[in-house]
Image (cartoon, rainbow, N blue to C red; front, side, top):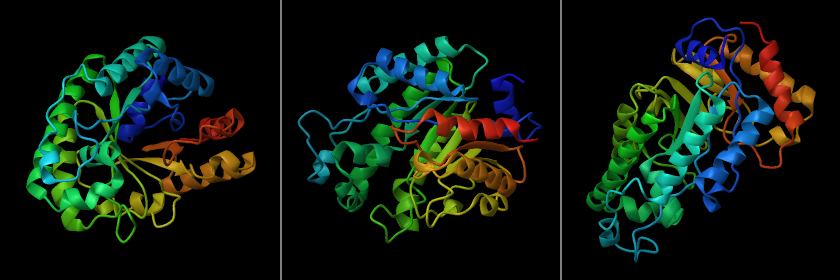
Length: 314
């Protein structure tokens, strides 16, 4: 099978020769242009010979001119729809075009996109979450403007083309943790925008990544997507076996990204075997860390889980 055939078969729950394996890493790419970003991502992809080319997106939303952070509801109303010439979009689009040219048409190219509320907090500080939620009318205007910008961006990546998007959302994080949200907050500030963006991605493989812990994945089980991704090994998060019993969607995960860089190779292989057992075998499953891996991780560790996947029987 080609890598693209293997990816689509896994997503559809069809037979595969082995489960696709992938990892991704942050490379401080907010500080470089799209060409250098593509170079760094390409080196990582080539070194791992991954079954999927999952491109990190480290270009962040910035506040409107004159706004350092949100101090009043009026600041939220200054967020407006953005041009695709803005750095957050232009540099990542350049990176994706170069990555597509580098890997060719037979490798799945997956972009990364963060949900609007998450993106705004990166711009203004996570301490502003409560203030934003205390002004739902102004928050809706701000999040709507960000969503419209992201919808335009999705239209651009479809032209490249990419094969899918890993869409990261905080919608499942439970209180009382610092980033936890209630069911009502999820329905007001996260779910509507998640659904709009996932609907705009129709035609692509939509990988919904539930970020953080502890998580309640029931909040996103009926999202319009093909794949569910989360850090299944983190404290408070459901196991692969638990989620497999809840949905027939393709699942993605299996490796503890917080410990992968410090584990002995036999321990990594044992974690792969356990993940495949929980998933019910190699079909309808993508093997990956639960989130991005540490920048200092060795190739030996990455190759250990990649090779274990390739020895797995379908």
